[in-house]
Image 1 (cartoon, rainbow, N blue to C red):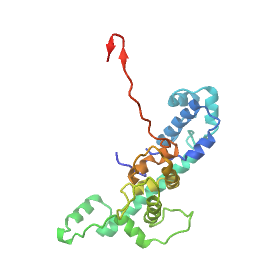
Image 2: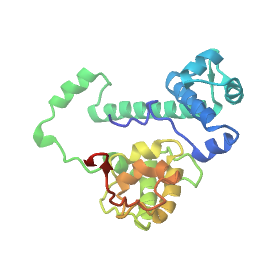
Image 3: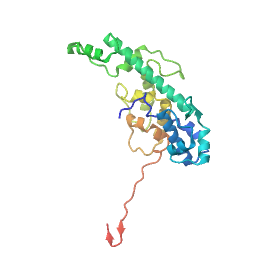
Image 4: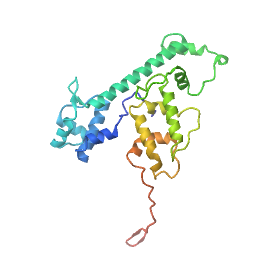
Length: 258
């Protein structure tokens, strides 16, 4: 399934903040808490009811419910959620609205009319093959780059041209990183914008990039597209150690060899 940055099937996790806020939880309580957060993210909240939440979480002890309940707030509809989670929901919704509006404006500029899909399709059919211009690689990044005035560090990166600017900075750091396959293409991978637009991902990616040279698991240099998928696993330390080499062993059973 294609990634969609404006959908709610991807929950942004700020690992350091999450771990720091849950140091007093047992592993079972933490697992139940994460299941409830995931449920709240995809469904807009969880019931303010211990029995219902226990079913969602796969079982809760009374003291575990108390630990979880004190971290949640009551929404306007009476359900529960987490303050940080709801702020991220607003950010995702705003990004989706911006992309939708940009698409509508692009249709008006391109086709000189409204956004009706049938009308757009009819107008597109009137364009002859001889009038079609070659599509430049990554046109959205090129267009943004031509219209962008760089903002100071710490400003909202979701400004015109942010994707192009962020990619230039990122690829320069990537190509200077050990265990990284240098990226030599003119434009970024097709998944770059979706990843970069995810709240907090750029910061986590740079932290993971700094740790990549010490990841002994990777016997060969890592491609940037694979790195995108591994960011959180690198931060979790899954690739710190070298791969284990399982030795041969004899396998026997009563009555003879297998």
